[in-house]
Length: 333
Ligand code: SF4
Ligand code: ZN
Image (cartoon, rainbow, N blue to C red):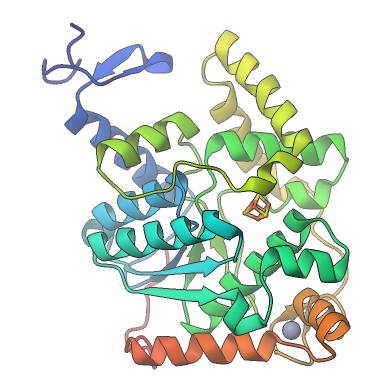
C-alpha cells in the first residue's frame, strides 16, 4: 500500500506533477495551502473583508466554501453565501438542498434566490420566452444576481468556484473565437466598480477539477453529483476539455501553467470598450441605458425586474442581520 510522503499514513491520493502520495489529512492541507497561496499571491482578500461565495450546489463551489471556511480565521475575512434556485427541474431541487446543507455544516449565512418566485420564470421558461439558448440566459442571470447580492451586502469580493480545468477551457474557447476581451476577464480576480459591480475572485485558480472533487469528497461536504441537463448543449467546451485533458496527460502541469501564465499577461488583453454606465432601472452596471437583465425582462414581461431581485436580496440580508454592515475592511496586502 502506498504511504503518505509527509507522515507515512496510508495514502489516498497521488499528486502526479509533484510525484508524491498524500494521506487524507495532508491532502486536505495540500489543497487548502494551494488556495491560500493563490489568494495571497493575487491579493484576493484582506483582513475584515466580506466575501460573498456563489454556491451552485456542485463539487467546485462546495470545495471553494470548504477551503475558504477552513482559512477564514487565519486570513481574517467574513463569509456569506448565495445560491440561485434556477428552476431546472430535479437538478435544481437537489442543488438547492445540497447548498443549504453545505452552508449549514460550515456555519455560513446563506441567501437563496428562487428565480420562479423572484423573477417570475425559471431558466427553461426564460429560454423559451426569449428564444435564447438556456446557457446563455442562465449565464447572464447568474452574473446579474450574484453581483446584485454582492452590492446589496456591501461585499468586498465575490468568490467563484472556477477551477484550473474550467479556466483553461474558457481561455482556449475565447482564443479560438478571438474574443480577447473575454480573456481579459479570466484572471484570478477582477476589480470592483464602486456602487455598481463587485470584483470577482477565483480562489481555486490553480486547483485541478479532480483535486476539487477529491477535496469536497474527503471533507464530507454535501454536493450534487449530477450535471445540469443543459450541459449537453455545451459541445465546444466538451471537445476542448478532451483536448486539454490529453495535453495534461502527456505534459503534467499544463493546465495550471496555462492559467498562471495568463495571470501574468492579463493586463495585455483588451478590456471591454465603452464607458461603464449605471442601469436606469436597477442602478447596477450596464453597457447601455439598461443592464442585460432589465433589457430582457422588459422585453418579455413588459417591465424591468432587476429592482425586484435587489429588493428580495435586501430583505433576506436584513432578516439575517447582514445589513447594515458594520466593520470596514483593511486593504488587501
Ligand atoms: Fe446554467 Fe447551462 Fe450551467 Fe445548466 S449548464 S447551470 S443552464 S449555464
Ligand atoms: Zn438593471
